[in-house]
Image (cartoon, rainbow, N blue to C red; front, side, top):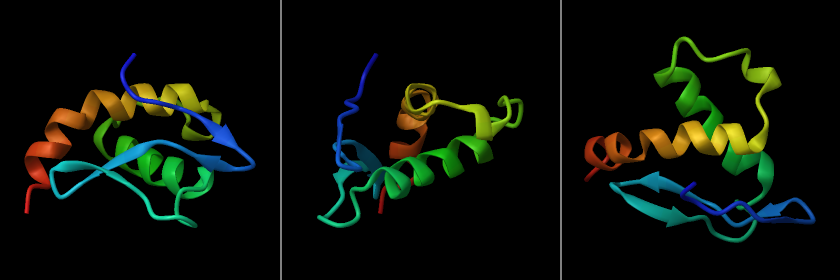
Length: 78
C-alpha cells in the first residue's frame, strides 16, 4: 500500500494532497485528528457507498484516500 502512517504522541507523518501535490503539514497541524479528519471528509464526499465512517480505522481511511490521490492531484492543481 502506498503512503506512510506513523504516529507518535498524537503526531502523524502523513501527507495530504493540496494544490496538486503532496503537502506535509506544518508543525502543530500534523496531529492525527487534523490529518485524518481531512482525509475522512474527502473520502466521505467521494465514496457515497462507504461503510459507516465512525467505524473506519486509520489504515482504511488511508487506503481510500490513496485511491483518490490521482483525481485529487488533477482537480486541485492551482
